[in-house]
Length: 315
Figure (cartoon, rainbow, N blue to C red):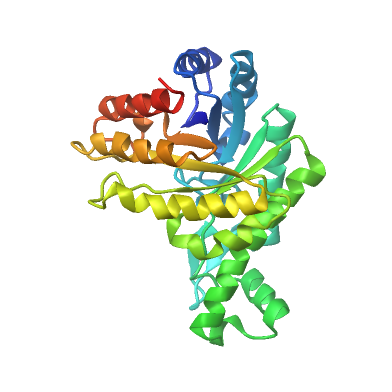
C-alpha cells in the first residue's frame, strides 16, 4: 500500500529538504505539492525544487493546483482571475462570483499551462483536486455548453436537467484535463478525488480512459458518525476502480481537526487499512500548521497520522 501526504511547501529549498527527509523517514512514497497560482509567478522556488528534492530521496512528486481559480481546494488566491474577469462564475442575476468556472475555455487553458510547467519541472503525476458541480453558475460558457448538449436554455431548465448538466460538467472537466496530460505529457499519472457527496458521478468518472487514479475523502474526524459507515463507501469505490482498471486511493483528514478529536484520525485510518485501497494519503503535512485550515493541535493530529502510515506499511 502506497502512502503519502499533501505538502504546502516552501520557496526555500533548505526547508523543503528538511521536510522531505522527514517524509522519507516516515516511509512515505508520494508527496503532493499544493502549488498555488502565485507560485507559478512570484514564488517559484517550491515548484522548481520540490520535484528534484523528492526524487533525490526516493519520493514521487505529484502536483496539485491548489486553490486554482479560487475554486479547487483551499488557498484561494487566483492571479489569473485578477486579470481575466471573464473567467468568473456568473449568478443567475448576472452577479459575479469570486470563483472561476472550469467550463470556461480560458480557465481550462490556464490550468493546462500550469500543467505544462509542472511536467517540465519533473513532477510525475497531476492531481485534479475535488472538482464538484458548479450549481450556481450561469456564465456564457455554461449557457453555451448546456445549449450545445441539450438544445435548451440553462436558466429556464428543470432542476433535474440542471443537475444532470452540472454533473456532466465535472466529468467533462476531469476528462479534458486527463486527456490533455496524456496527449502532451504522457509520463504524468492522472489522478482525481471526488467527494462522497458527489458519488453519483463516480461511475462515469471511473470510465474516463485517460484517468489513471480515482479516490475520495471521508473527512469525518469532526463528526460523530460511526467509522464503520465508511466500509460500504470504500467498497463501492473499490469495485468501480477494479472494474475500470483504476488505481484506488483514499484521503485521511489532518486539517481543521478539532482538539479532542485526534483519536478519530487513527480510527478512520484503521478502517482504510483494513479495506486495502491501493494508497492512503493524508491532508496535510504536520496538520497544516501555520495556515488557516490548521488542526487545533497540529502535533497531536500529526502523531495520529504517523501511526496510520506506519500501520499501512505493516509496522
